[in-house]
Image: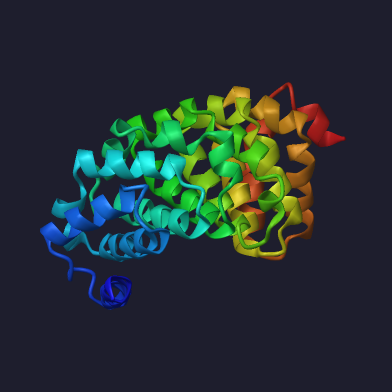
Length: 277
């Protein structure tokens, strides 16, 4: 009966996220984080919390350090795919509730637990998509962005998601995340050092979706502002890819941004001869 009531509450929350009261959320969090509790009950509790986090009206009840810390620790230890999916949905929603949500997540150690190889490797594709979209949102805050990059997030993603990186369902989210990070020049050095250039070029080469390829080209455009990044792009044969894009792409935005990306290389004595060959 208790499980049925929780499932019903979860269904109601899907369309009416403000249904749970402050007291309800505290009780649900307690049951979810209590590892001795029945797994089905924990899943149902987390589903309700995840649905509740979709509405900004619940921000005052959810954006509390003890709550977030408990969920971060629970996320780091849970191996149940369904429970983890709901938790990833929750953090994905949480960072949209308030502009300070990202810094709260960082203070609660989200990045320390999330970007461990074992944690990333065990995520479902659904959770991997949630993570990319979460990081894209978090990238807007400079302090949060720096914390994410310091955790070697790009390198760990590349190592842990060998199969997922080639999945066309993940590609749009991964490409958007990369463009959100590279938009900010302070992330360029770490992005390059962690293998981000090759990641973006590989996504571009594999994808048949123009939107995904455009995100990759935009990442190259942002990176081209940095001398250090230019060197990495050249080493990964990025200039040849950009020239090929200018020649073969039919979408005007792809061609235009490829040409824009090539301008810094054409202006450099180091790369101009290579472009002329």
